[in-house]
Length: 185
Image 1 (cartoon, rainbow, N blue to C red):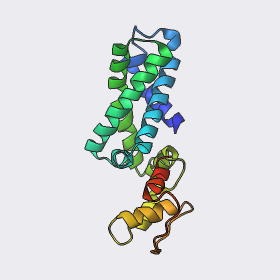
Image 2 (cartoon, rainbow, N blue to C red; image 1 turned 60 degrees about the horizontal axis):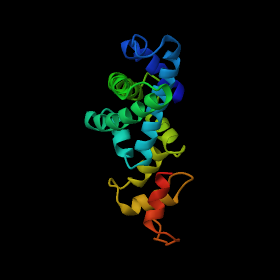
Image 3 (cartoon, one colour; image 1 turned 180 degrees about the vertical axis):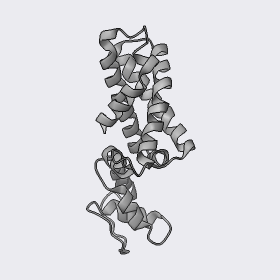
């Protein structure tokens, strides 16, 4: 996924990075890497910090979700640029504001395009959440047409695939908090 992000950032770098006098010519590749890494890190923070719904919404074309994800990712990219390149916070902010929305939009378009095999929503979410096939697990859990706490508990207790049978509630240690905590590790 990082390679896909780097390619998208390179394609969109334009005046924000390559024509920006605040970034020396020999630092353009470093800036692309900082932006790409910042976007990936920001997406991971979204996935692990309770924003998985917004992330999936962004990848499926929900503009409100995309705006939410965009705001969080821009902050991460700003910090990455500032820390890795030592540029001013204002320049870092302008680069993040120019590049992140376009890259996330392109990523969303790729995920929605059935003819583009480079990005799949399930693969993106899986890479950001530790490789679990959350889409299949959620679809199986929602076989009855709704998602409720018992469905979430089944998902959290089932790390090897989907389980469509209802099982009795079993307590094992830390309860629901520990199970939901596993979602964001």
